[in-house]
Length: 229
Image (cartoon, rainbow, N blue to C red; front, side, top):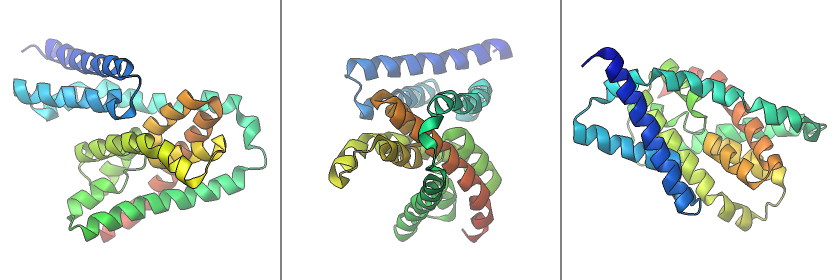
């Protein structure tokens, strides 16, 4: 097959799978367990399996989307700038909370996986699970983790985190939109941030801030600890 045609087919398949995911999500009344990232990934996985397409070829053909992930994350700085006045006097407590929370999110996942008997490969892939995808992929490459497995874990974490967040907020009595945003950003990264903006601008902005700082903190300390896995 012509290389250009192959590239166009793979790109087109990704876009179609995502549109199917969006359609299902909207028809379901925006049920989070039917989030486009999850349903779209399932559609792509089934298509690759049925058509016997090598995943590596598919991944390489979609390099453009990997490049755009970083730009999409950076674009979240725009709503953050508009709501920057809400951060006055809160930077230090927010930074401390995010630094501690990101460490706990990583440590608890690794602890449970280790107790369950997970091997080194799975532990490495799980380590950046609370970091948004573009940063998680960079960390995974730096620590020698399986990037495909890390991507799946990150998406699953985001969907589950956003799905159970209303129940967690209710059980803990957390009603402050700023706190809700921070919790979503730390634990559910991109998916949680998108969900935050659906709730309110304040929740979304604080989720953006938490997501970005969680990624920055994790990228700084996780590679140094990877040698202990």
